[in-house]
Length: 98
Image 1: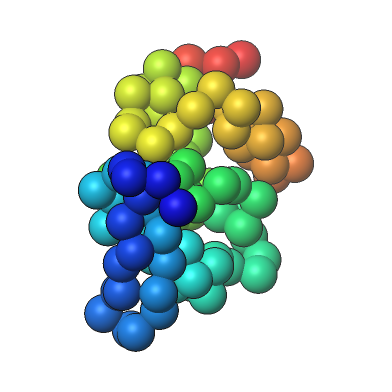
Image 2: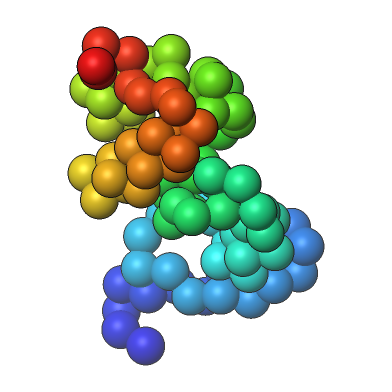
C-alpha cells in the first residue's frame, strides 16, 4: 500500500482501499449493480451519473442530447455507443438525432 492509499470501511462494514477521497465502496457498488436493463451495461460511475440526474428509463435518456449526457460527472465517451445501441434497439435515439 502506498502513502496515498487509505483503508476505509463503509457504512455496511466492507473494508476497501482507495487512493482518493472517493466515498464509494466498490463492494456496495457491485451489490447494487442491476442484472438487467440498460443501466446494467454501464460502468458504476456512468450508471451513478445517470441515476444522480434522474435518468432511470430509456425514455428519459432519449429526452437528452449526447452533449448533455456527456456533461454529467462520471459519464465518459465510451458509454455513448452502448447507450446509442440500446436506444436504437427500442426505436429511440438521443434528442436531436435523426
